[in-house]
Amino acid sequence: MTIQRRPQPQRRRKITAIVLAGIILYLVAVTAASPTASDAWKALRQQKNLALALLRSQLGDRRDAEDLPAAVALAIGQSPMLLSGQSAVLALRRSVETDGSTPPGDGNQTPDVDGTAPIPENPIQPDTPLVFADNGVTAKTLVPTSPDGYIVTGGVYINNRSDRSFDASLFDGTFAAALPEAEGPQVLIVHTHGSEAYTMPPGEEYEASGDCRTTDNSFNVVRVGDEIAKALEEAGLSVLHDNTLCDYPAYNGAYNRSLDVVNSYLAKYPTISFVLDVHRDAISDADGTVYKVVSNVAGLNAAQMSFVIGTDGGGLDHPNWKENLKLAAAIHQKLTDDFPTLMRPMTVRNSRYNQHTTLGSLLIEVGAAGNSLDEALLSARLLGKAMAEVIQNK
Image (cartoon, rainbow, N blue to C red; front, side, top):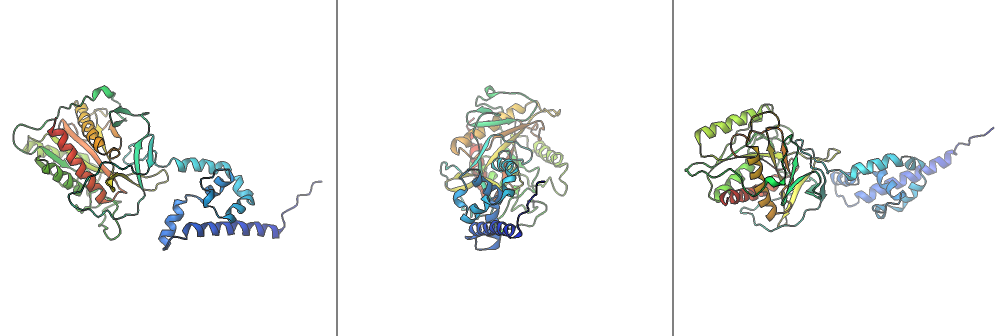
């Protein structure tokens, strides 16, 4: 007969005490520099997972070993429980380390992007000083690291998620949209989802109408449209900016309502050749943590932007979608020439997004919900200036 000997209670208590001591010392080390409970919680969240850090050291991964207190290292060796979870934690490790590679947003998927620190770019001095107060959201710069999965033309990366096919030969620098010869408004700015807003710093909060949404046009994407309009007008273009919130009070049907808005302007002002629908994206990691997308412009965080181009792949009439795409690519290239990481990859979809109304109809995502308004306003200025140069120098 084989007799199973149970661990003595004293030994169990000793092991438990060592493990608890290690965990307590670890928590103290992580939060020691945090002046408030809120800061301490943020510090803990940045560590991702205690068991993950412990097992990394046990498995020979030295990236976090220098940050582990000696008591924690001792606890690892005394804890069969931690070692028994090796496979599960390794799987968790892989999922954590790939967070941010496929930002969901409005459904956009951007494969093979790098969430590294911002890359310094050509300097620019804002016309009006912006505050750029910290809104507490983690910043990432998403840039393609490989052409795989994209159509690439110059510095423009295109993610084709439509049923329509095209290749880089489409982009020769030309596009059909042109400024009218007759006098009158030339550019129309609208907002299908006008209540989309940003994450404001403490003390600058707005009255919300939904999750990161507000009907206060001083804080939502209508304010961003104001900044784009100003930059276009300073370049000599005639601009109309409609501030209708087509997504409020009902979100469903917003594109039908914005189409009515666009058609009403086109009927009244036939000189309008360019229509810009301004949105912001919504991006989070695989674990649901919201982050902002930024580009370093003269030491300031500018919100990264991306064009979304519609096609007739969904069955709606839109025969000239390639002309919208070519215009977007030209503006994207101009921005990339001046600010290499300002633009995220462009996305082409089956939905037409009301872009059948003119040869120069575009949808632009200025930043994401995690960005601050000032970050979006800086990008709006850069976008307006680049768009004006492209359409005036055709």
